[in-house]
Image (cartoon, rainbow, N blue to C red; front, side, top):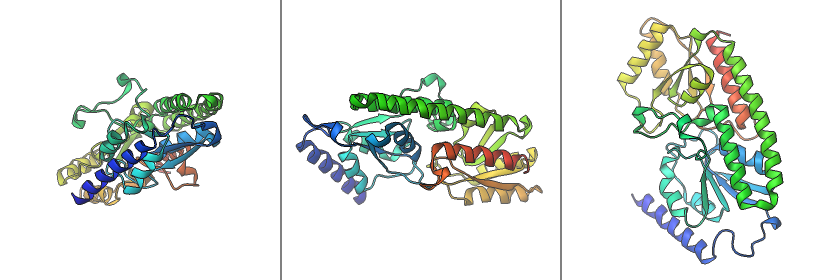
Length: 313
């Protein structure tokens, strides 16, 4: 309670202090003379901004590798970074649930854009167990994430129209790369027999992936990791794995491995040995500077790991 009160006070001070200086882009502030200051939440968004913005933007990502955005709480430093930004990009669809109040307080000071707001709601998944909200993990369908790229491009152009040609050219190049990525994931998935396309992970983050690439998807936890799995969830999933004789289950980089290890032990108790097929990147990418630390690398790693493990390679 004390930390929450302190953080809210800092938000007010940051916003009010910034307000004394006027808007983040004050009258007479020549954007052409400096980089655009952008703050993002999850790494997948940081990757989009870096690709579309290029040298025109200076990007600060709040959530690094292994960070769970469902449980993330803004730090005092985050509040100050957000207050100093020209533009904020976040996932939306309740992905960063713990930062809702921060975005609300910042709303009058800095423009905050949900990268998913341009995706038609008819194409989103709305699981009944998620209290009427949409599943936020849209980046697992590459074609949906391409629409997030377009939203970032348009927001940057609106802020900095003088660099519109640059943003359009960079976005066109990156979208072409994502189009090839989508085709690669399709080819690899189609190389796996349909009855082997069963993906079981720590939490239910891969439903868009399943719909787009023909996988049956099961997660031990729900869509948000804020809801912990219980003994009944472990038993139910273990029964399913043993009955279907699923070769492999997968851990996630942003979710403790013990959740899947509990399922593995329960399956063994039923007389079947299921392997941990590897680690997937779900709500966070890999380490900066690595291939998996990019969106393309993250998706490539995931599909290769899934297909290789389920095919017994």
